[in-house]
Length: 162
Figure 1 (cartoon, rainbow, N blue to C red):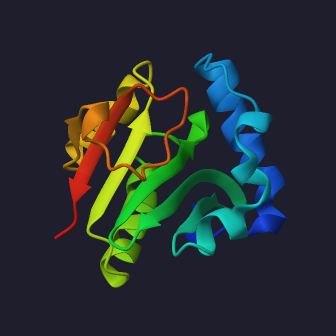
Figure 2: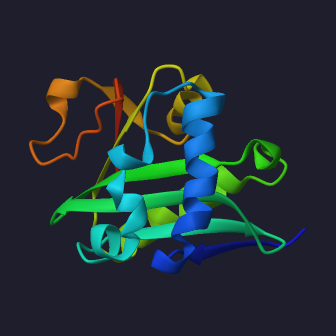
Figure 3: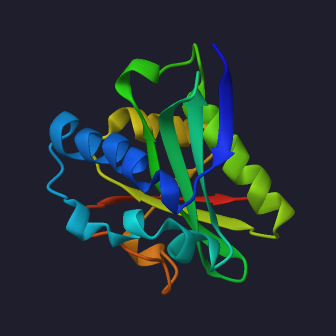
């Protein structure tokens, strides 16, 4: 199987939405809709214009996972839209790990020293994944003022990039 991590632009919006919404709504019953996530319809302006990015994991040409970086000040950014289709999860392909490493390499190359993210407590596997990768759970009150909060998130993490 060929795995490629590629930059995602607006023309891939529909494929991104086809991955993310079913995972949120059907698999994990998170009450969130496309209307709550207008960024998915304008990836280039929301993520790239501010100095972040959006990447996809392609397995044999099929988009199987996503990760996005939303830069919110000169040295800090938030991880967003980290999703891998159920059939492609796990250590065998390591898509989540490849996506995260791509994002962290981008941060190192672009002088982003602090990564933050919010997630939902029901996503236990995601929480374990972030903790295995050195993220530390923090209180919501410890988030930077400019951190872009998502209403559904109730667990927060921080990673200092060395």
